[in-house]
Each structure stands twice: as structure tokens, then as C-alpha cells.
Image (cartoon, rainbow, N blue to C red; front, side):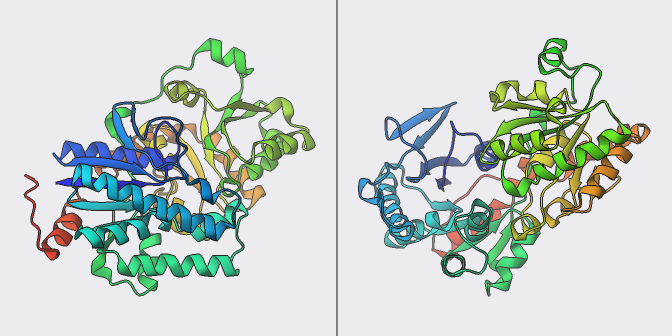
Length: 410
């Protein structure tokens, strides 16, 4: 089976989107399927239109020059046309059996347009809804004209695609509410490569000294700093935590659009010397920073995006046997069994976050059981091999429906 994936962005960029993509690709190749990969104009192109990164080949789509400076809606139409043109070229080269377009919807329409022309079935995979992400990024308002227009386009794409996959039950429910038949929608849940993670090691003393974490109890967040992550709530909770545990510090590893706001907030709260910003660190060094953390905190705010979308970070933490505390938004509740595989607090409530941090740090006798249960959960239910196996029925169904048949050997 030959699958051409159409992606928003890819390596060498690092994001949850990229890591999910890599998990899918590795597991698909382990099944004996051939995968090919095209990025749209949203991925920056600095050189060749066929790029090898960490052993993966990506076909690139150059950004169209006539889209610069235009209105967003016009620019997006121009980008979709550029994706369709490039997709025509790549299809002629790799001759795929299936086009697998990953969200946003800007990838789905070119895939369906070109796929229909060549008689190639299209899978549309929804990882989050573009309209909800735009609200968090400040480029749209919930319920506004642009939001409604984007939601309409998503719904059209979902109804027209040959098959739809998504990452969690929250998104599946939303898709079904748009009138998409249940038999057309399959959940391919977020997962981890269990073998790639091991239990934490002793933190390096040099890094501890460098970051000023000697004798400190460390609350940590490692990832991108988006507004919906609620890191401002963690900083606001810190003075309350310090009232009970004065040696607690917060370690923020990563960066993003909220970084300067968070630094300003730490100064305003007078907690500068208890909050460490490392900036972005190379991926091969990240594990060393995880080893510094006593309690990982994921304080996501409650909003449509976080209520219906499951993140990847908690699963990675469980695979490493880490202790984690997360807000009780819907996306977290799908992953974390409170008091068994991790801990939850009431979303958007600083006082409850502070209370639960202190409570969890005083429950260390429970931690070995929590670590073991979290690791078992990802080993048995959230590994990429089991998750990607669900594509077998999806791909097979649409190939049979299109008059094609492929023996995958499974």
C-alpha cells in the first residue's frame, strides 16, 4: 500500500503535530506500507523541493509569491491552489493508492480536488479544528464571521472525504454532530512509541547547578507556550504553593508566543527567582530536563479546543513513569484517571491548582503505584502499533469502495 500524506508542517520543526506524524509514519512502515510526505506552503522552504530530514524524505511546496500581503482568505485560497499544483506533480512521481490529508482543512480541499481527478480516495484526519485554534491564536473570535465560515468549510470537507479519522472521542462526537455518518469516522488515538521512553534517570548535578535548582522541589512544564496551556495560572498559583512549601520552583522548558507575557507576570508577582525559563532546548537534550522535574503540571484552560482535543504530552510523561497533575478539561480526562495514572485539578481555578500541587507533593508514598499504572496504560492501550492498526480497516474500506484492493500482508 502506498500512502501520500499531506501535512501542514514537518521535521525539522518540532511540535506535537510533528511528533504524532512521526509516530504514525514509523508504525505504518512497520506494517510494510510505503509512505510519502508532502508539506504545504505553510512549511518554510529554504532549499530543495525534495528534502531529506532525519532519514525522512519530504516533498515541499514553495510559498506562492502572489499571496504576500493579501487578505487572509485570499492568501489561503492561493495556498490551496499551490498545494494542488504540487500534489499533481508528486502524484505523478510516487503514484499513491491513498491520499491522507491531515488537518487543517486547507490540506483537505486540495487533496480531494486532485484525488477525484486521479481516482484516488482521500482520508481526512482531524487533529483539531482550525477555527478553534484560530480563536486561541487571536486571529478569529468564537462565533464570528470568520469562525463560522471556517467551521462551514470543515463540515463540507468532512462530508466529502471518503473517510474521516480523528484523534479522540471528543472530536469524534463533534464530527458526528455535523451530520457525518458514524461508520465513516474512526478514532486513531494519540499514542507513544513506548520503547523510546524509559523511566527517569538521576538528574545531572551540573544542570541542577546551572539552573539554580539545588535543594528545590521542581514543578515543570516542557513544551510550547500557548495561551490555552494556562501557564499563567501555574505562576499565579506558585506564591500560594510557596506559603506551604517555600523551596518549590517552576521550570519552564520551551518557548512560544506567551513567553514574554509569562516573564512579565513572574516579575509582577515577585517570583522571578523561583521561575526558570530555559528557552527551547535541542530534542536530544529534553530528557535531561524531564529528569529535573518532581511534578509535571499541565494547567490547560477550559475552552472548546481543550475540552474536545487530547494532547500528547501526558502520554509521553506516563511512558516515562512521571508524576503529573493536569486540569480536568475533557482532553485530559480522556487520558488521565485521577489518583490512578495521574492527578487532576479543577480547570481555571488557581486556588485548586495550588491546593492540589501541595497535596500531590505530600503523597509521595503513592507515586510508585501511579508511575506503574501510567506506564501500563500506555503500554497496553496507547502505543503506536495498536493505534495505527486501526488504519487497516479505514484504508481497506475506501480502496474496496473505489474498486481497488490491496493486500497489506497483515
